[in-house]
Length: 347
Image (cartoon, rainbow, N blue to C red; front, top):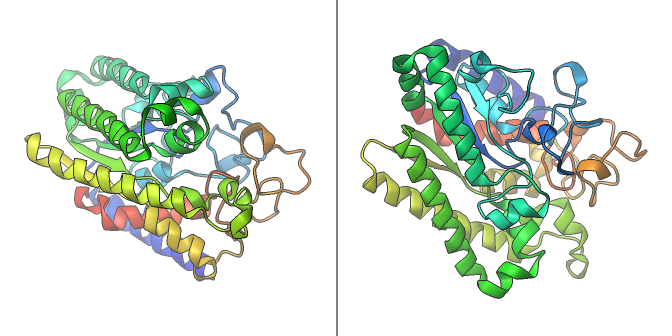
């Protein structure tokens, strides 16, 4: 019942804000947390365009979203009175008329660090910005330069990235660990984040949400390997998430002082996610330690397929869909929290 109640509250919230939307478009950069299908169009194993992914999405079709249904930016777009989904820029089913009100350049398995994107051969973060520059040209040709410039300056830019830099790169491979302490690596990533936001600003963006990273030590993939601590959350990873989020929050404060007219906010999913994981029953969940798909312990991507007999029948009972990514229901609750606490200033 708690989950249904939360859902209805968010529906009511949608109906209220749709009458006074101030944002003409939502423009998204990042990783699998916000990739709505770009990786479907590139040669990589970091894909989810097959069942059972998307089984609770409209039409029950896999789209390339790493979830059983919608991802956070879909809910955020709807909350601002825009479309109920944000399409992927590389998806041939969509055109500039669709992208004029919402577009995602995100690529699953990417990170701030170029070495992170190299691991699974996905779109590097800097390339996402190059696609955005191309998008601007297409938008001006479609809308006229004046109308496009309005969209560019008034759109909401959402950045969600960083987890892969730690779990897929720093802790999994030796290169960065040999170069940086964990604190130095956080500073390295924060520097890239600062440059990215500054470049976006100089391209005309003004309303920007820089996302933090979740309690990554509580992902089922990490808990499964945390045998000495009874498969509980890996606290050292969570501590890094808290530390890195603090650095990003400081970066946001500094850039708001340095860049005239920018409205940069820090959207932190950490505590909303941690509350759900710590007290799942309060949100209508039954399982937080393992995921719905397959055995729920280590599978994601191609290891989470429709032929696995262990996949749960009701994803709404689970906090996580696969070992790395939340269910649609979790995405809804976290998105509602971010909209209410941070993004509402743009409404």
